[in-house]
Image 1 (cartoon, rainbow, N blue to C red):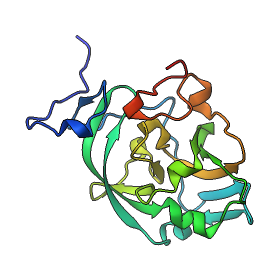
Image 2 (image 1 turned 30 degrees about the vertical axis):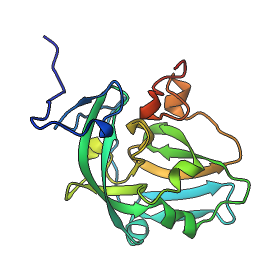
Image 3 (image 1 turned 120 degrees about the horizontal axis):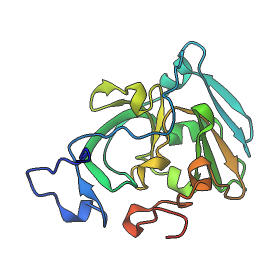
Image 4 (image 1 turned 90 degrees about the vertical axis):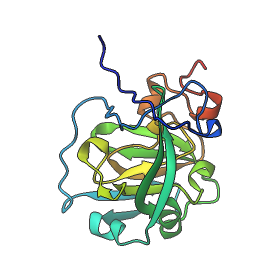
Length: 200
């Protein structure tokens, strides 16, 4: 029998919080392709580049020293599980946006991560006050399996857009598929529209 990652909650969840085709779980399944990268925070850097007024490179100490906030949100995985009431702590995307503003013609972002992974996100989807570069989850440091030392959290899109092991963002004038989108995932990934794959 296949291992079941789903553990249904005993209490009934508000159906308005669960997108179509999703199953609730109390667990936080670990899903990734390839090995978990080994990261030395002392040598780690985060780049903001592309269509920006001034490219920026930050150390881990510098990015974690930026103003932080805690976001409580639900997460929805393209593999059809949802986990409600997560707490992520980190640096709001808006703080990075203010630190290195894009040029006026920037409309899209490619989020670059370790090991050559990336995902694309429309800039408007990142300019929400609940989008954070997180380093803590539910009161604990993120584990490497879940994206430590830094992962993007975009609560209103499928969770692959919340890239693990983030190393930078690239502003673009035109949309460009990231790693996952080049391999069949949807360009936007709205769970309420079930935008799972490129042919949806």
